[in-house]
Amino acid sequence: MVLIKLVNICYDYPDTCGLKDLSLTVNSGDFVCLMGPNGSGKSTLLRLLSGLASPTSGTYQFHDQPITTTYLADAQNRQQLHQRIGMVFQNTDVQLFNTSVTEEVAFGPRQLGLSAAMVAQRVADCLQLTDCANLADRVPYQLSGGEKKRVALASVLALNPEILLLDEPLNGLTIAAQQQMLTLLQRLQAAGKTIIMASHNYQQVQAVGERFIIFNSTHQVDADLTRADLDQQPARQAQLMTL
Ligand SMILES: Nc1ncnc2c1ncn2[C@@H]1O[C@H](COP(=O)(O)OP(=O)(O)OP(=O)(O)O)[C@@H](O)[C@H]1O
Image (cartoon, rainbow, N blue to C red; front, side, top):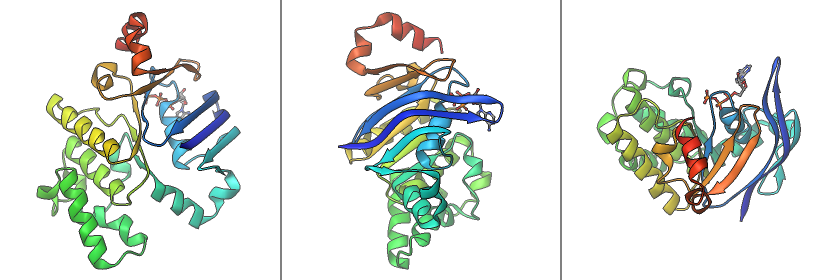
């Protein structure tokens, strides 16, 4: 089932291009890695998909619903989109603002109007899933980089989104923590989530990604390949290793 359809998307910042002529579809259950050099447009695409920005031109549909500026001007539509498409930011400090990890993870479900018992259940489930139960009473701002990433993911999962957008989720993590994060993402995919993850490190993601969308330095998609495609293209793999 097609979840996301982008046609001829361009996004311009005031004095530079962010994305150029991007068309793609994402199906339910995909595990997509957005690859490309610094500044190629990966984060810009994630911001558009999450509804934090609207394209300068082109169309974005989610479940056949056009996600337009007018659509996003409605607070209820925005809230619904944010519930269905969760985003873990590259800099998790921008999304962690509560006084304890428990409060952080409870914030979203409370906003949805869930009962106190359901909120508590979701918090417990998501803390356990992300291995954060031991952090429940800590202040998010004071956590380590890797802990912050897990808490940010827990707070997004608490909304039970269909799609998870992750911007460089492995950056700054130890090898063991990277593996833990990738295993968790694979489990989430197996549980039915669609994963779209930006990375510039092919070595880190090659084992988990099933589809690789590769941007070039002019903010365009250079290639859209399955893992099987990539296995047949050593030159492309070598190029990805040097991003
Ligand atoms: N807030 C902004 N204002 C102006 N230009 C921006 C802004 N954010 C990104 N850009 C520009 O848009 C282009 C795409 O940037 P983007 O952050 O999407 O790239 P990226 O592939 O995620 O890079 P990185 O791997 O470094 O995170 C770059 O040329 C960048 O300089």
